[in-house]
Each structure stands twice: as C-alpha cells, then as structure tokens.
Image (cartoon, rainbow, N blue to C red; front, side):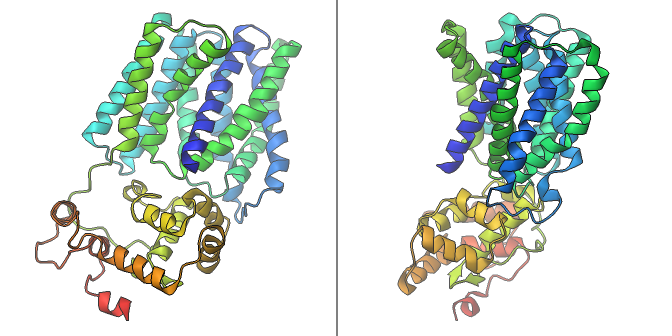
Length: 435
C-alpha cells in the first residue's frame, strides 16, 4: 500500500510539473533558461536542509548524489525547457516519453529483464494510448527542438536508472540538485542577455523546483527501489493522462471521447505490465551471489529473514541481479513482512539506513508484532515446505525445474529447494537447518 501511495504521489507531482511548465513557458511568463535556473536552485534550497533533518544515513559519498546524476538532471531540465518553446505540447510529449521508454526499457533488456508477452502487449497498448491522446496536436517538429527533447528524455531515463541504486533518496536527490548549481550558473551567464521573467513566471518556477521537482524526485527515488526498470518506464506513461485529467478538473477543458479511449488504453496497458511476471530464465543455474544468504540461514530463529535483508542491501547498492527484481518485496518477501505485520517499504528504509539484522528484526517486532516460539515454528514450517504437497506441487515446481534445467530426480520439491539449487547450493541441508 505504501508503494502504491508513493507511486501515485510521484506521478501526480510529475503531472503537476508538466502543467506548471506549460503555464510558465507557454504563456511566455519566463524564458526557458531562467525557468530552469530558478527551478534547480529552489530545489536545492529546499532539499539540502531537508536532507540534514531526515533519519537517512548517507554513509558513503555515493549515497549523497553524484556528478553524473547531476549532469543527467541538469541536461533533462535545460533541454526540456529549451525544446518546449519550439515544439507543440503533443509532439514534445511524444518525443519526451518515447525517448524515456526507449532508454529505460532498452537498459532493462540489456541488464537481463525479460518481459512476458502480455507485458509487451501492455507496453504496446499504453504507447498506442499515448499516441491516440496526443496525435491531434502533433505537427512536424522543429529539428533542433526534437533533438533537445529527445536528449531530455534520454537524460531523464539515465537519471531514473541511476536512482534505483540510491540508498538514501533524500540525500541523493539533494546532492544531485546541489551539484547542478555550477552548471546553472554557467548557463545563466551564457544566456544573461536573453533572461526575462514576470512575477508569475518566477512563482511557477519556484513551485516547480521546490515541490513538484524537488520533493517529487525524492519520492521517485524511493519508488524506484521497488520497481523493475521496465515497470518504472511504463508507469510514467500515466503522466500525460494525469495532466490531461488535471486540465479537465482545473482548467475547464472538455472531456472528449478521445481522452476516454486513450485513458483506457494507457491504464489497461500499464496494468498488464505491472501485474504480470517476467518469463523465467531458461538454461543453467546461476552462480551464488556474494552477500546473499541461503533461505535456511536464520535471524532471531526465522528462516529467510536474513536473505530478505540481503536483497534489500544488494538492491540499494545496485548489485542485485535483474532477475531478482521481479520478486523483490513480493513472493517470500511479501509473506514475511505480512506475517510480521510491517510495511516492506518502511523496512527497506530501516535497512538502507544501516540497521543490522538484529536491529531490523527488533524494529519489526516493535512496529508489527512480537512472534512467539510457536509462531516462529509455524512460519518456518510454511516457508520451508512451500511447494510440497500444496497448490504449487503439480504446476509451479515442475515448471521451475524445467525452466532452470534441473533433472526430475534432483530432489527439488519445495520453493527453498529451487532457490538453493539455482544458486549452486545443496538442497539436502534441511535436517541441519532444523537441528
């Protein structure tokens, strides 16, 4: 539920940012460079002090942002503003979101993500909805404007990809905004003779930078921890829909049949991408992953809990293989946090902030419920025997064995067995684990 709320708030901030940019630049209330300068400065002014008062522990320099991410942020912002004045709203959105999709989905495929056929159909439906929504306003684009907007989309895609490994979202976003300030200063000096701004344009730029960009991007970095790159890319296709609906709600724009059809296509396509699982890997098992424990290793008597924490830490460090992202926060992770009555995203915040295994479990007991010895026994029994003589026995387990290339007589009868064998560990350790 927390992930859903964060995602909804993030996409709403993105849509609001689109409206603010449209009002400021489309109405010539401010020039593109001045808008970008004020947007990034105001974001830094709000986020840098905020980062000092959060509970995040940015223990490494990388956790406090990077120059490469800052360059992506600046390139996105300045190229978007400059392109906006020479492109129609429809064409600008098509180029921007098309380049974002190409960048992020392309990276996802390169890093090992393999969307299911249904997910590909969902992507097609969502992109078709975007085309249907924006096509009436599309004209042949200005070549320079198209190049700038395409560069903006690529830069935003790269900024988002790098955000998946940010362990401290507030500190990272604050650091990235702060690092753009030298770039902002240079761009302001270069364009000094053409800078102009009306009071309303300044206000819109400040709101865009401090609220919908600054705070919105913090939420985006938090959301990215729980999304595959492909899902993160496709979810952003909801932004034009939200912006159009906001126009209906706040600007008295008409509700048209085109808007309803496009909204249905995009929402349906996004739902197919988000809800369906990727195709399991075919071929030989994976090698053991450094820093990722066995399902059988215990923390406070609980099987699997330590492994879940390892996945959170590896994901935050950008070292969790793409195949594992599909089930992060779901599957056994989800069963574990639900049994403990805690929120997975909140647990991630604790672990990424530096909590040890014991501290993380103590936090779960304090925020959720304290388990008795019998409840620990029930949990361990369920987790370790899942797939044996239940609804997964005749379907899921045989399918996994076939997909991973395991022999029928390999002794694999549970989900734990599948995981252990896939990572090159023996499956006959259950007696020792229970002793």
